[in-house]
Length: 484
Image (cartoon, rainbow, N blue to C red; front, top):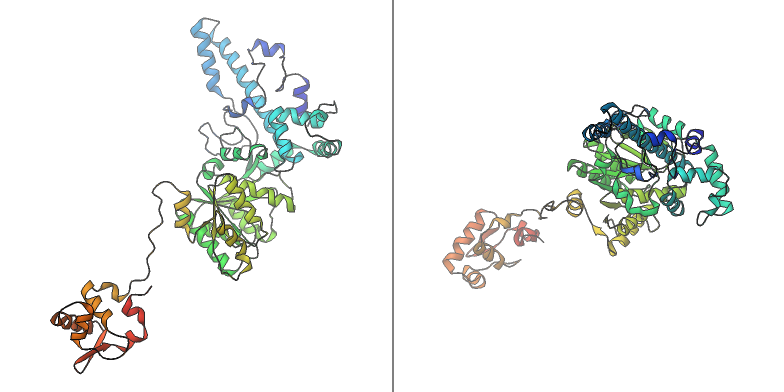
């Protein structure tokens, strides 16, 4: 932590009211704080070009943001306040300060992912009030400032300081870069702004593995979650939803667990689509072990996302807290098989609280694995059975599911008069054409002509002077009445 703390000790870090003489000579803004620079452009920082698109990770070398420097030089020349080179130097100084402050903020947030547990709202309020660099300093330096944080206790502070002392953010950043990953902070172009809906429970940052842009993928994404010990029906429905959503251009988000999660990921990959796994451990940890191959495919073809730094292992509470990220990241959550006490239902209810869609796939009424889904559907959950119905809810105007129709039966091709004559025939016995005409409301000649037409189609047969339904029609009432 010496690199981060040294900048603050020299008075050049965010949160200081004064500046050094060199800063004043360069025209540095003494008031910029750690949160102020979050939305600024920092050039090609951590593998992202100026247009926001993903690039192969190039470690942590920062490229200069020459745009502001050029504008600074132009302003100096236009106003006659010195030569062009001098003005450009002042612009580069402001640029360097901004980039340096942004990098200190990034390193501090990376360290805080080692110190704070995911979803810690109290720590989130501290972070919002002080900024990452200052909060990390307070948790590291014993000057009494940490004790003044609202809600801080000696027991909590002791735990925070143990973790802060062991944090090595530069090593974590190098570790994620070694597996082709990066660390994304609030304010970065790749940061999904919908995560801000979590308020103070918003992640400190996200460790991301994979080439696609996380923000762009998250704009059109749906979560598919469910039971680990799912039935063959649940696995089939999850895979079908995953492939169907992928074919329609949606990103499938899940937790890479056994059962429904894995089936949803595989369905999307099989369709050649996009899928994101949100883990409760580090992005370089193959958990569960049985999904090491699947996670490898996700790193190559999709995205792996985690709040926890590299090499972190999951705990029971982290699985539950991970679910809030899945709910916030996506437009809606589909639950496929879940018991009453299920983490998948936690995800769905969190989605509802955030104003997202919560959907459920119904199962057998006698199945305990579908009991939680049915409870969700009895409330405000929406019933869905395929990808079309999901897209109809979460998609844009005009993304409507096709009209549902039953099977086309032979009777459906009959005209109205012929259908009435067929309906007039009793199930058993023989009827005279005059009786049928009276029942059908047609003339005797018209009825006789329709009977011969029905005979040619195999619906009726003649017996003496009367007519009766053919035996297959008697056995299959749907053939005569058109089904239900």
